Image 1 (cartoon, rainbow, N blue to C red):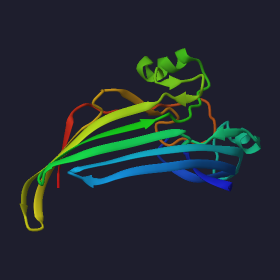
Image 2 (image 1 turned 90 degrees about the horizontal axis):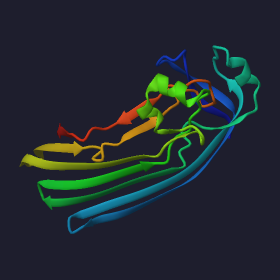
Image 3 (image 1 turned 180 degrees about the horizontal axis):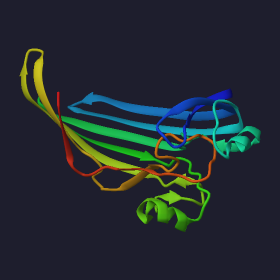
Image 4 (image 1 turned 180 degrees about the vertical axis):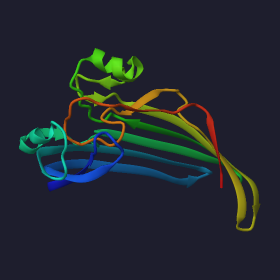
Length: 212
């Protein structure tokens, strides 16, 4: 597709505005299997494979900074910001009684693209070794992420259409540090740029109660 739309961030703030670059080629496959409720058990498993590349030059938008001229004149190819090749979510739930159900959920992502013009030691100095260890600079990608969760729900009170339900989610049972994005603290431009700011996501293994 030509004149592919994206967003740029104004001087590393939370303010973004639309831009467009010459073209993009995005291809993928998505498969989902579902097990309908059977003896109180239900399950689902999904898989997504995606490959996405964009091509410079930039064809529209507002550009500030030293990299504006190079972005307008280059014809470089680069992976788009959401080019995660493999994504795998899964979930199994079991209804113990009309009031109580338990579930287990897993999610896996092969990692988003990274662009960092510098040495590993420079990244460690800025972001810390724990975060940098979750980045594969040689292949230009964040290392794979994995999360195992355990949600549950219990109906405390029900009368007709009225009910009070308490839900507790225990997230990231393995207490794994997952770095989701190493491109920017906010949304970063999709083309390669110098520097980076990580956006790390770590879920604590603590229940999160919810009431509906």
